[in-house]
Image 1: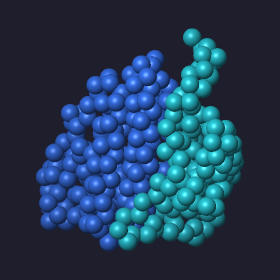
Image 2: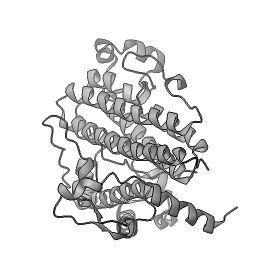
Image 3: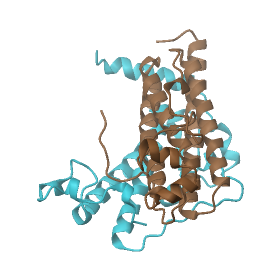
Image 4: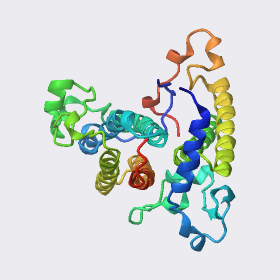
Length: 162
Length: 190
């Protein structure tokens, strides 16, 4: 049943039917960093950097809503391990945000390119972290070392970092 | 299937014991608008979505909710782990200790245990996704109530962050709702 031509056809149709919720964003964000000419119109929206997005919990500036006068808490890395962890978490989060966006807009090539950019960065940063500080993923190469580091390394709930 | 990552989606490192706050916070673990209810709701509803957009959005947001359960659980654990029995009793957690010792247990802030009656599944994409939108709004409102109840930046950081995730998820579900509304109006439900 993996008829990919049929799937492509479906997406094509979806695209024509889709409602563009960012249609009016041109008026709000004159200095756009994203352009999506493949949507059939100049649809643009502002994205935060992975660092700012991770701090705020939101990659998409048009969706960000502050609560009362609460500013997001700034995360500060005090050592190399925290710095690497944060770098990885930020890029993984940016890729995840674009993942959710692309689920709804699978034909958006510029968002797809950005997703792959952050995904590759996150993958590489995770390997770097794992090589120095132990496995995050059960498929990590550092698991060749004895004893079994998956069990040996601190569990996330124990805290201590950041 | 799922692959676990041995980290939190956003860091939780609470240094100060606070049983009062833990008692309130548990509602986002096992209350009607909890992360647990969200994860089960979305991961259960996804099978009957009319096309891949719905299946993808519900799977990916449902998966993220699992990571939020872990964040909330971690916060409750860190807020309570150093408490003495006397302190638990003083904070009104004596009954919890009697039932569960210091183990976590999904209840709301009044101690009412989690139930799947907190969510629905109708098989109707518009009905199910409207519920999902409402669920995100209710969880956002509860996060705001919880934010009002603490001054500890170690607690506020993750709460503000999780609140923002409710807003993003709400908007993604809204997009999905509007997309299906158009699609189903055009008599194209496959």
